Length: 496
Image (cartoon, rainbow, N blue to C red; front, top):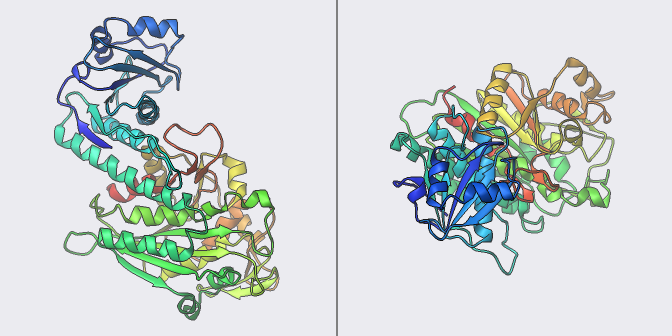
């Protein structure tokens, strides 16, 4: 699907479908009024007859044989008129365009009858992201598929053409990276093994000019990654400790080095602390953090990110065999601390602990990790919001701003000292589980013990990483969402 900045006024664009976002109780003004006139003055009348009020998610489709556009689509965006409303509108519009087999689609980039205070380039980027993400389907294993629109015309008005063109490109890069992460998560676990995830990282490295190191189990164990090795012990699939490195093209040293760390459990049975059958149903998604990191790394060169970045993905299965780690085993991690493994289903924090310690050894200036870590975070924040915790408020504030720009919901949770007290071991330095209460915060407190003094932020993405239920934004399909990619790209590409 190709995005093109339109040179012609919206109401004069020849296309198969023209879409307009309309605010709640809004009238058809400005561009929308000209579209209404070109459609023979029928849009408002039909909208009223259909009970269209502009409420979020409402749509009215009208055939307009007398206009340059064959169909007009009104999409309600509710009372909001910002970039998130535009993402949702564009996704709704592009999905309807596919339903009616529209090959050429025109999208307005401002909301009818709403006061716009968002810069034109941000509006254009939001529309590109909404349409690009909204058309996504994981259909590699389907026999048939419906064709997507081939061309999307963006009517952006009088904004600076250079800035608008860069916004389109930035939106396309974000969409491609997010969809790459979705693909990795959506692959079944018999396909997306740790070795396959390492191959995906290898392809990203080759395509984006990145450095790549893949440590095998013996190498990781020799380095002291006892926690990573303990989780891998029960699987017949060889684990892979994946490290990607991006260096900016600019000459001279990078202003700072950032480590992105992702949990990469390609399937999680719970180990000997086995999950019930229903709890395993979506556990191919337990590597969503690693998928987000690998996909983000592949987009950095396209956005000319000015900082050096390590992407670290600790990839293994958590399975059961005669060598599997037992509850009560004590293991030493790369950071030097010993951990009693009370619950083998609290494995993500174990592989992350060694990955965080590896980032510290690499001498990075700040660390951001992403992990489908705790059901407790889903209980606290619901299906669509990730939890944020860390040891550096300035870093977390920047991530919150980036998430708001990206349209990804992120909420800070507390990280009090009491949470760490619960994770202290009786016969070891730490234990990996301490019950359900404050589970997300206790897990984060455990991780904090492995980052030393490095500024660190932890994103618990257990809720928004995988979509099952109704209520998702229209640009999110069932399955992997690619959560975190757009936030990381906004963060890394923005001035500090």
